[in-house]
Length: 96
Image (cartoon, rainbow, N blue to C red):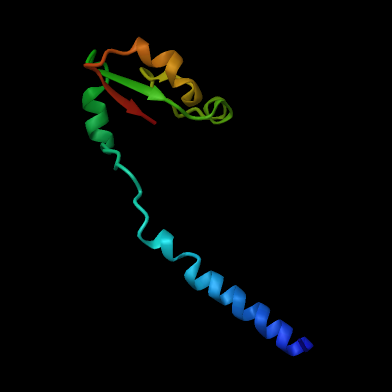
């Protein structure tokens, strides 16, 4: 294969991958959607025993910020099995 032919082949192959390699991703299912609430809705639930607000930010992000919800409980998202039993199945869990 000549040098110009070699580069033409490589470029064509890369274009093929860029165009058709992403095609399966276009119709990918994102899975279940997570309901969201507004700040006003959250304020209405603050202090309710029926609601648990759980802060799942990374420790370094949690320590660096002064923006915390006073009644929120800090939990490690990688250890759900350890802390999930603390919460009632009847409670609404709000994660941030």
